[in-house]
Length: 350
Image (cartoon, rainbow, N blue to C red; front, side, top):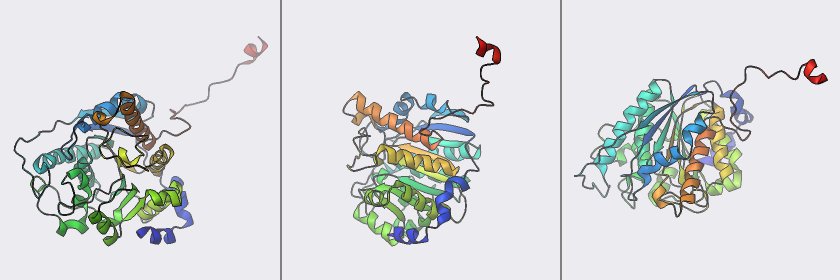
């Protein structure tokens, strides 16, 4: 695993990213919903943006110093005639949705906003990351997920595109990807050295081969158990940011968490992140000052066993988002111009 080399290169300076990379805090955050489900088979994930909003997202963001712009939800067309291609499900529908999302992300980032994209299934990362890369070609990608989502049509066991988005991005996989209908608008734009996975615990055989062959930096849950989440984040930033400061794209699948915390999702896997580990990841990414775009995906209210399960999953998503944008476990505090004066002498004598 590339982890061993990165650990050997980890220097004392990499422990101080929190102090080094704090120059570009968000001044304006744009929220964009992407209610889309055709990257996988289970209905309901298209309602993810609504339940995350209903869990108090906008109210939480209003506690911060930056301005918040709600861009609403994109409207996606679902093509009636969209036959599978090499077992890939709904290729034209997924491709068109991602093309539309890509343009919206590029526009928001170009306007100076830090963008929050609410999914929807994780196939949407194709459009989200590519749109970001059109504005910021030097970006790096942190993928927090139980799954690697780097299958190609030839290695995918299911044909679902939410398990393949990273394969569309990587230059190293360019000769392994066929010309899938609906995706002629995008070309690979990311190098394997610009990607780090955190939280993996369900990786398909073809994906494992890609991770090893391309030397991709990744942390399984076993690595997190062994190293601790603080060390994982130190190595992540050393790997991605030691050469230069650059925009971070955080793509966060709610199934990175243990299903006991996030039950309302499509592909839960036992043994996931604890609440504290997930929030720590978000806090540390915020502390770099380099977060530019964040995806929060795969919240599926139709798969919650009860209203409480749905609420717990959506509230967890809001907590992660808020921590990525500056909420600390001391609370998210608005700035005060001055501390209110104490009681004057007259009040003291009374």
